[in-house]
Image (cartoon, rainbow, N blue to C red; front, side, top):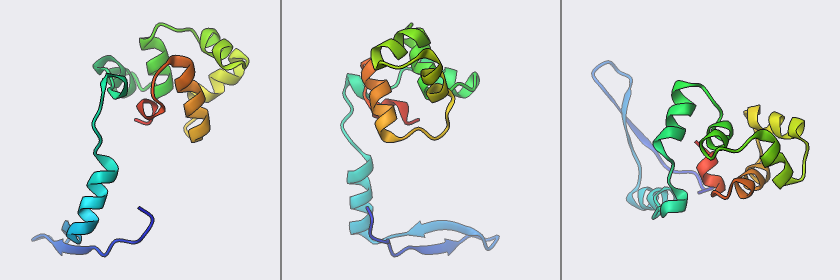
Length: 115
């Protein structure tokens, strides 16, 4: 959604915002935007989540290791050098197009890399 949402905040006992109230239509639009039916290709295995959160890996590295690929193998599938791929794997600001290329090389959906 690109249009601003009229939000009303309700404070708790400590005076800090505790609730946010939005128009129902805006809520429905947010739900429709965020909630999708996930199929097998769009889920994220527990092992990948563990690597990201417990081993502090990027989602790209976690997926690559989960799928038993080397950096060189993914780089070759993408038609780039291993060094270039390594930079993508450690970057915190990959563009959508980059994530799509990496996901294609791994045969996953790019949304699975956006954790």
